[in-house]
Length: 306
Image 1: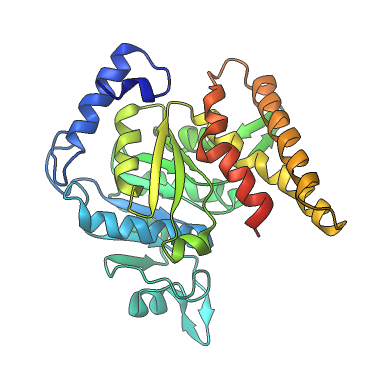
Image 2: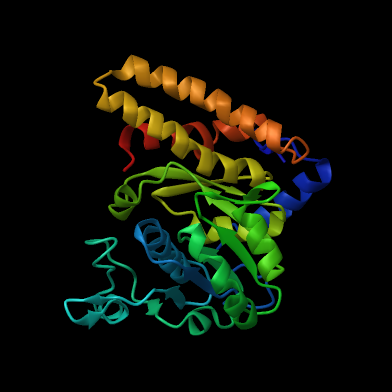
């Protein structure tokens, strides 16, 4: 209760709930959030640069906290590397030699080329892949995950239909009939691979699930903040890339830090305006733009991103 003034504005009921949940998560092996130790089974769909950096942390935390099953399955789109399947290389070397070379996974991370097998019985499924590949995968995932599974999107992008903008988290909620949290932040994967300190933000709708995903990702070199604002977090992760293109133009024209700072400032204001214009009733919190998913991700993408 002494720390509630540091939280984002929520109702007193939600504050009480978060306090109780955080007490249950304060020590490894707490059973307040599950029927038995090891009952939460983690899976990652997507094995690219960022997905590999994230599953590396999931593997460590699955061993650190008794609430998680030890094994973390990683769905890998099979490729041949020097005549050998990538999944076989990952499982033998504990390393994704193509997309995150030099960063070792814990041995409990198992690469699986079959999607249904990768998510079979999973209670917590994380997604980190190009969004255009997501829709065809969802029927198989829905049939294979555990009943009541919760999901998290680390996909930085948005989709469109005839009515306009479509959030990836909404695609997941509708396609899987599942609660969906969102992870976005100033997280350059290659820096994460060498355990350089960074922060990230998890936006949630269900506070209990938000705290579970925080437990799954929070680590000594990755500090996780949570906010009850999935829409704001997700839009920040997509829109900052547009501003970063402008920053790249500035670099290419030979302009310096002053010009790029102006682009970032104006770009952040336009990000906020976009969010309020297209999602006026979504409850987007102005403070979300000051989290890692907002200004921090914008800065690192404009200065140090790919």
